[in-house]
Image (cartoon, rainbow, N blue to C red; front, top):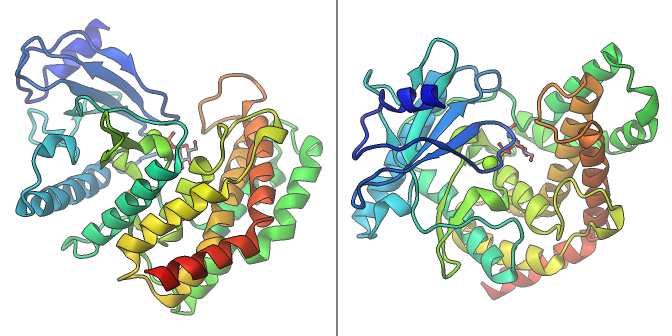
Amino acid sequence: MKALHNLVSHFQLQGTPQQPEPLGSGLINDSYLVRTVEADAPDYVLQRINHAIFQDVDLLQHNIRCVTEHIRRQLKAAGTPDLDRRVLRFIPAETGKDYWFDGTSYWRMMVFVKDSFTHQAVTPTSSRNAGLAFGQFQAQLADLPETLGETIPNFHNMEFRLQQLDEAVAADAVGRVAGVQDLLEAVAQRRETMCQAERLYREGKLPKRICHCDTKVNNMLFDADDNILCVIDLDTVMPSFIFSDFGDFLRTGANPVAEDEPDLNRIDFDLAIFEAFTEGYLQSARSFLTPLEIELLPYAAELFPYMQFVRFLTDWINGDTYYKIQYPEHNLVRSRAQLQLLTRVEACGDKMKSIIRTLLSKQ
Ligand code: GN1
Ligand code: MG
C-alpha cells in the first residue's frame, strides 16, 4: 500500500492525498479511492489499467481525453453547472501524459465524482434517463473532430468473438469442451442471424458511430435524487454499431438479477424496462439513427446476451484467462445465465417490435 501512495505523488493533484482504499467491483481494472485531507480539494480515483487487455495505453488515454474534453466543452457552452460531476476529469502525471508507468503497470487518476451512486438494478424511470443519457452521449460525440481508434480491436465484432470461441474449442486447453456441448449447440443455432451487423456493414448499409461499448447499469453515476450525473468507464469508447450501447444496457438493466445469477428461473427480460429505456434512447438518438438501425433494435437486445454468452463461454473453455472469477465454475455459471437471458429476450421479439412502433408514432 505504501507503493500505491508513492504512485499518487507522480500525478498533478490538488490537496494532500491520503492512503488509497480499494474501490468498486470492475471485472477488468483495479480501482482505489484516494481521499484528500483538505475539504475543498477533490478526492480522486486511482486505477491500474489492465494492460493485458488495453495494450495501447496511449491510444486508450487519447480516446478518453478527446471524449471527455469534447463533452466538457459542450456542457460548458450550455452553461451546465458542477462540471466535475457531469463528465470525468483525468489528471495528468508529471510527464504530462494521462497515465504513469511504474516499470510494470500503467496507472491513471481521475477526479472522484462526489455524492454519486451506482445502481446494480434499475427502475423504469432510471432506465428512461439512461436511454436519454446514452443516446445523448452518442449524439454529443457525433461531431467529435478527432478520429478514435479501437481500444480493443474487434471488441464488439460478433464474427471475431465466434472465431475466438472456435479457436478455444479447437485448442481445448483445459479439457472443458466435452462438458459444454449443449452450450456450443446453442451458439451454433444462432450464429448466422447474430452476425448480420457485420454483413450489413460490409454491404455499406450500416454505419459505425462513436459508442460507449460498456453501457452497463453500473457504468452510470446518479445523484441522490436518482438523476444521471455522467457516464463512466470510458475505456471502450470507440467506433461501433449503436447496437452496442442499446443492447448492452438492456442486457444488464432489463434482467432483474445479476449477469451471473446461478438460479436460471430468476433470470428474465423485463419489457417495462425495455420500453422505458427505448423511449429515452429514441428521444435523444432518433434524429441521427437510420431506419435500418431502428429496425434492428430488437436484434441488438438479443445480440448482447448472445455475445456475452459467447465471451464467457470462451473464457471458461480457455481456463479463465480473461475475466476475474470468484469461484471455479464462475464463467460457466455466467455463460448459462447469459444464454437463459437470451432465450427470454427471444421470446419477446414481437412485443419489442410493437413497443418500438408505438413509441415512434407517439414521438
Ligand atoms: C467487462 O470492466 P467491466 O466489468 O465494466 C467487459 C465488458 C463485459 C463485462 C461483463 C473491456 O466490463 O465487455 O460486458 O465485463 N469489458 C471488457 O461483466 O472486456
Ligand atoms: Mg465497469
